[in-house]
Length: 107
Image (cartoon, rainbow, N blue to C red; front, side):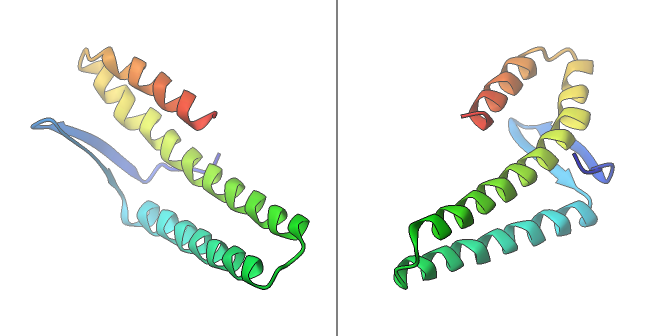
């Protein structure tokens, strides 16, 4: 997993949950998502050109891997900051929330 020390603490104020990422982390995440968006457009182009199915599946696999890497960065920051902060504040519900999130990621 990549370093995400730049992730700042999450806020849980007025029932509006937000996370605050440093400019470096936000730039990293946005760059990854822009590349993924380009890969998706590329896959659409391959389908339009009737490209061999196995080649398209390979590209889809690359997109899934890129999304998983992005999720890992977010999950690491979430664990190190948001979850720790909420547990320290006595909020044990965050553990159930985290388990649900992990189950969702593992589908």
